Amino acid sequence: MVDENKLAEELTDHEAELYDRQLRLWGLDSQKRLRAAKVLLIGLDGFGAEIAKNIILAGVNTVTFLDHRNVTELDRCSQFFVPKEDIGKNRAEASLLRAQNLNSMVNVKADSGKVDDKPDDYFGQFNIVCAMHCTITQLKRINRACRNQKVKFFAGDVWGALGYVFIDLQEHEYGEDITKQKKIKIPEGGEPVGKEKIETIIVNEKRTDTFVPFEFILNVPKSSLVREEEIYYMMLILLNYREKYGEDPLPSERGCENLKNEASTIIKKYELGNKIDHLVESDLYAQLSPVCSVVGGVMAQEIIKAASQKHAPLNNLFTFNPDTSCGVILKLGY
Image (cartoon, rainbow, N blue to C red):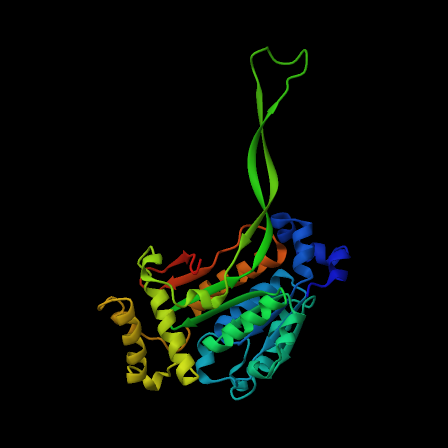
C-alpha cells in the first residue's frame, strides 16, 4: 500500500534538487504521491529492466524485483542491469546493484522466489504490480489478487520487435490540467467601455476512469477491433503458446510446429487469412533493445501517471507494431 508517512513528509532539499525538473512538470503533490509508491516488478528481462530504470529515476519509494529465472545469453540483447560475468546467476539479484546505483533515494529489493509460490496477500503490500513473462493463468490470478486488494495492475511483454502493455487501474481518480478562458472585469477608469479582456487560466479537474480485468481482453469479437490490429492477434498467439508450453519459443525452435499450430488457431478464429503470416515467421525470440526501450517507456510512463494521479491514463491496451514502428491504443473488453 502507499506509504502514508511518505505522503505527509515534505521533500528534503536534496530531493527537491534531484527532482527539480519533475516538480516543475507535474507539481509537488504528484511527486510526493510518487515518492510514496511501492512497486513490484515480476520478471526482470530487458523489458522489465527498462521499466525499472525509468521508475527508479522518477523517484518511487520502493521497487521490488521478483524473478526466479537465471541470467542467460539472450539477456545480453537487452538486459543492461546484468554484467556478462553474471550469466547463470539469479536475474533479480544480479540486477540489484546497477539498479540501486541509479537512485540512492529509492529502496530497490530483489526476491528470487517464484510468483506461483507467493500467496495472494503478498501482492497487497504494494500499490502497483507489474507482471512480465507470465502465463495467462498467472496473469489472471495476479490480476484477481490485485483487484481484491485495490492494487493497480499492469502486464506486458516484448517478443523480438513487437510488444504490448495492459493496464487495470480499477476505479482510478486523477487530475488533469485543463486550459480555460475567463472574462476579466475592467475596473472604472480602465480601458474604454465595450472592450473586454480574456484571461487564459489552467484549472486542475478531477476525473475518474474505470478499467476491466485482463481476462476480459482475451476473447473479444473481431467486430470490436475497429482497426487493423495485427499485434493483438500475435499477443494472443504468443500468450497461448506460453500458457501451453510454459515458456516462449527459443531461437533453436524457429519455425516450430507448436508455434504454427497456435497461430493457426487464432488465424482461423478471426478469419485472418495470410495477414499475419509474416509476423509469425519473423524473429520473435530475443528481445530487441530499442523495442524494449519504447514499450518499456510506455509502461513506465503509465506507472508514473497512475502513482502520481496526474494526467489521463492509457485505457487499456497498447501494442507496438514493428512494421509501422508505431503504437496503437485499444480499449477492449467493455
